[in-house]
Length: 113
Length: 117
Image 1 (cartoon, one colour):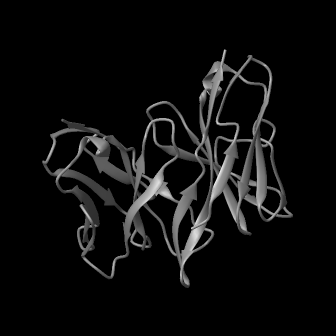
Image 2 (tube, rainbow over the protein chains, first blue to last red):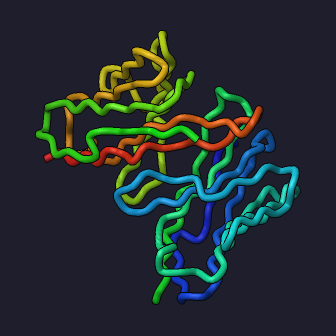
């Protein structure tokens, strides 16, 4: 199965709150799990990524939590800011150059001031 | 990671015409990828463009509608032909980066927003 499921579809958070977006995959061959941030009118930009040899990766206010046995990973945005308002896509891929990305359907995050 | 320049950034085209989108990368890459993002949707891979060979198209996408050129290792074009309003989307080119010896994520161009009237 190549599908990546993502939830919620949309999320509204108050400034300073924690935003949590969840993704689940089925293909155990996947070994690279990035999150992309996309602002209106722009292409997606790589935000943070994790490989399955670690359970958590943190970069500033952004943290990925990875559960290999459950085949799930999540993005946590701490101290959410209005500037974080964007659409977030999780994705999964294997470490084979010929393999393509599988994107989640996206989560539209709105952070209220 | 690679820097991708994509143009035009947006265009409004008449039904039945074609639009060619250019993608320039600041480094040599084996594969370049073309994606479509319909309004409010996720990204869908159109095709993979290899230098010196024909592009590989995903299910639902055909060469007659989306011809691709890849004349060298830093440049590619995607043409969207015989435009209809259903082609109104954002089109993105991308390349895959490396993190040392491992492959890492895709870098995307800023996209071309196409509106067909």
